[in-house]
Structure formats: structure tokens, C-alpha cells
Length: 136
Image 1 (cartoon, rainbow, N blue to C red):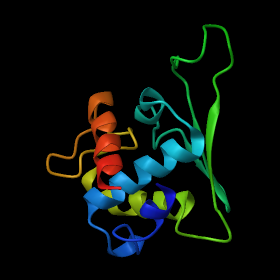
Image 2 (cartoon, one colour):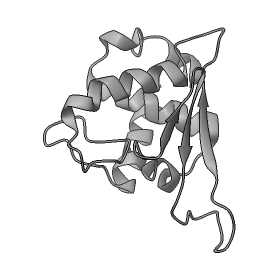
Image 3 (cartoon, rainbow, N blue to C red):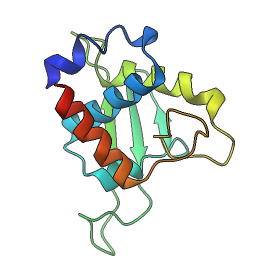
């Protein structure tokens, strides 16, 4: 799966259509962080800290795998120095490409790749996962 996502048809990142860029980002986050669909849905551009070699998402809501009264966790997206095509570079490109599509109230990271550019549901994210698995 990883070799499929890194190379054709998902490379180079800056020439991808928004659909392919979205699918690549979703799969890389899911594979790297072993994240549930609900966790990926809760990723927010508002709770994103940008550092020089990593991006950090903070969760404020209650996730399925967390319990009340337990500290909320963070998700790290680090730069992978041997191969810049992985998560960090893809996420930065995705944020750059979707910036004109977002209004000031849209904070969910993943949005639809066709107009109207609205936040996506858990079902859509799960369907995207199946689409990439079928393609691979």
C-alpha cells in the first residue's frame, strides 16, 4: 500500500488534482498513525501547531478510544528526511491547495474535493479508504 501511495499515480505532490491529494493524505495519516476514521475526521486546522520539522494536531473532544477525565492526546505528522514525499510534505501541500476553498468557519482538515467545499463525514472518509484500497 505504501509503495502505491508514494509513487504513481500519487507523485509528484504539487501536480496532483485535489482528489488525489486528499486520498493520499488520508491514507498516509491513517497508515502512519493507525488512526480511526473518527480521529481523522476530528483533525482540525484550528488546533494545528506548525513546527520546523513536524505538525501537531491537538484533540479537544472525546475520541472513541479515550475515556472521560483522561488527557486528550495529540497526533504528530513529522517530516521523514529520507523521503520528503511522505506525510509532512503532503499535508503542507494539502493545506496550501485547500486554503482558497475554505472559509473562516471551516476548521476540519479534510474537506470535499468538489464544490461546495464542505467538511466531510466519517462515512466519506471510510469510503475514501476503500477507494484507495481498491485502486492499490
